[in-house]
Length: 475
Ligand code: GLN
Image 1 (spheres, helix red, strand yellow):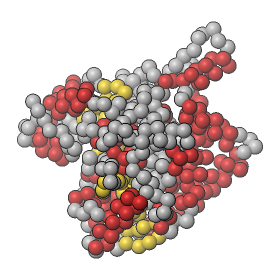
Image 2 (spheres, helix red, strand yellow):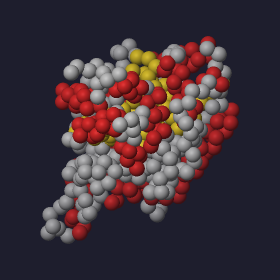
Image 3 (cartoon, helix red, strand yellow):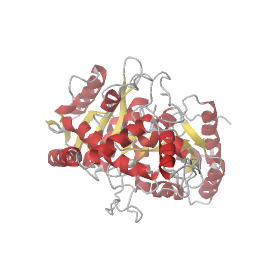
Image 4 (cartoon, helix red, strand yellow):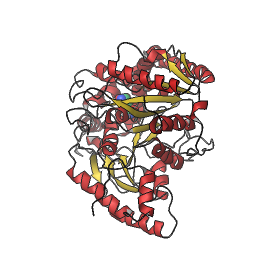
């Protein structure tokens, strides 16, 4: 059976199920076939149970017990645990690690009937902006194989863009879902901090991490959030705020829009800047109220992020010592030799760089100068957003300073690489939510994304505006 699986949305799949055009099993087979032929290196592990899960979903639909997600294939970043499947976090140190339980967010999607198709490639422990830090090799951008897909959820974004799965999960600590979404031309949502349980997502920087969906449409990310959001007793930082109905249609034009001037400097790629400006003009011409605002601490966000994040990384990654799980060393070694062997052989260069940086930042002599100072900046950035969100509902910014860059272009210069996160890290620092969707292409036919930001727990506003732009008016 030949199924056209180009850019399928969840609604389209459900309609096809209803019309008996294809079953979940047939659909899953079609994606698995695409994965077999794929050249992007998006997957680390294929779920051998995928077809069995799909059959089960078909049964459930037949019995009239399906949800909107039943039978929908899902690709999962390899940093999120799914019981019984390998979970490597893109690292040699966990090359053969099998997850012993399932992350809460993923379990909720499973309970709704989703089919896990496989685990996607990512930068090691979610550290990177190009997916070139994976032990399992780089992921190629499906739109142009000479370009990076973005990172660290590069495999998840590429999987959706290359029609290897209609929906994927990634994690976003500083932009790792939004930046690859922009580079690959798909939709990526970073939920507010605390909206989704982090239980079962291997921690990179716990005060910044969120599990986050990637999909072909804005509505699809809303469906996913609707199901996975909400309090989880296993994650003390998950919020017990009620999960609203995200799918309800709301009037987009009632939203007050803000354009933060600091996000439109001349240092960013001209085509990206123009596309976003054009989108803003288009919204204005449709009667949206748009106001220029200022987020004056924006310039300090990246510096604060690259202090806070490695500090947390150095502490979170201390657990990978090969004593309980993962890479082991020769049993004859002394404890110190064991640690040295496992950690120096198991971690890649970028991970080591951040562990060292974080350890330095947290050490007695430097804690006040770096860590404490960065925490103060974090508060200022949060206050900046709180003030602005009293005046506007949604901020519109570029998602990235450029379109997808060439493989290898920034690997020798970490600072250049870190600059790719300049527009995304602030949302994680402040704990607010953000949505990226494609709005245009550059001269080389590479996607350009727009970023929408809203206050904590105001995801509904992102969906309303995102939906409007996607369906009614791209710039
Ligand atoms: N690119 C950023 C970094 O390397 C973001 C990572 C992420 O969001 N997981 O830290």
